[in-house]
View 1 (cartoon, rainbow, N blue to C red):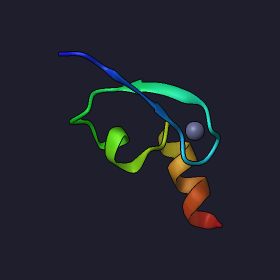
View 2: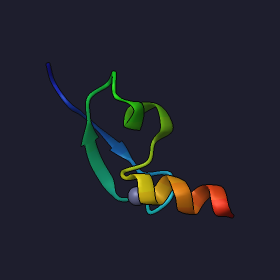
View 3: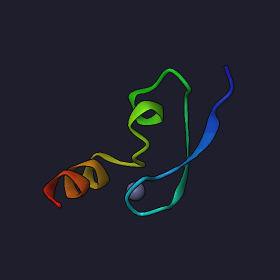
View 4: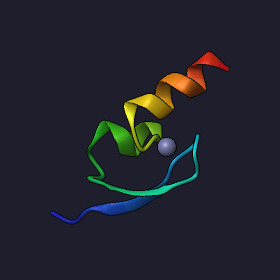
Length: 40
Ligand SMILES: [Zn+2]
């Protein structure tokens, strides 16, 4: 199964994630970015 490239909604880094993965849905490259974004 192919990975797709997404751009992190927080740090704008590109990252590869499986389309079915939670990261593809949330658009964060890491849990850290998700946490930081929610703190804003
Ligand atoms: Zn990020």
